[in-house]
Length: 229
Image 1 (cartoon, helix red, strand yellow):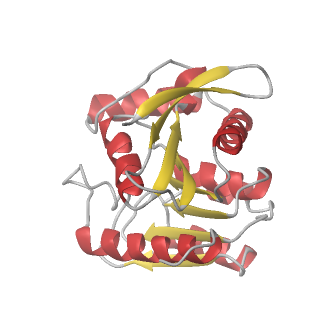
Image 2: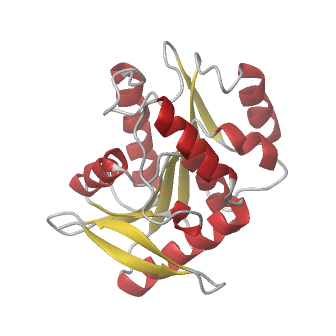
């Protein structure tokens, strides 16, 4: 059964995290990083999807540092609230809470650890790869702010997904990421905009691109987290 656990960062801040576990033996662990809408119903379902695939999936409530138990929907009000809260959170704090999630996993399992993030979480996953020890593979979906951290070198293999019709992430930015980090695997998807993997949102979801990205992500994690897909 899914549950909430407490994470404690190096600065002493305590936050909650949502944890979903597979029914059988787990093959690896994943830190699942939220969008700007918090660990809402959709992100819990994302964790459960990963658990169904054999992972222990943990989603830290990064926004606890600004507003505890923050959740928002995918409407104009929800976007405005999410943007406001996320603007008050530093990526140094995000990195601290990612590190706390790694520590919790190390205390509770010996499994290999990966990280996957969406939107806001795509950038957080990039920083998990560049700043946090103990992560063996990172995948970022449409991380708009990765361009601010191109001088940082990943410490583990990284895969990034972008939609070609994402109005918030111009092709030139993706070009810069690829040029700065040829060691990173970058995919661009036709007929896909921002949040194309958000399966609970029919306005954003693009099933074909989402299925292809998910299959590539699963193969990537199988390769780098030490198990057969």
